[in-house]
Image (cartoon, rainbow, N blue to C red):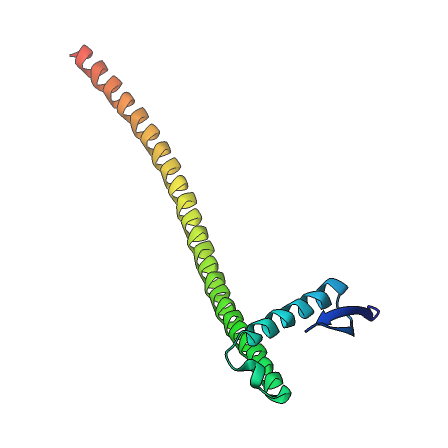
Length: 137
């Protein structure tokens, strides 16, 4: 089991100590993300007049909105991946079927070549026989 990581981050201009099992880089990314969302909220008209509680709720709503959008995107990507997996399976099946047909066609071609050689041999024998009969007459 990983050991807990502690790191100091700056969120909204204040220093906080975060701890978790994730890497320090991850915890810094989380803080950077929050700072970006806070900055976006601060740029909204009327933000400065809001109560601290309302500011917190606005930030929470923005973070929740990001979460649900990303969750939906992940679901879409998972569906796309499932579809691509099915397409790959179908293509592999088609490839195997085509390989079997090709193998069978190769066997059929070899059998036909053998039959052709046999018929040519018989043809030569019959022509030879016919020429021998003509010479006797």
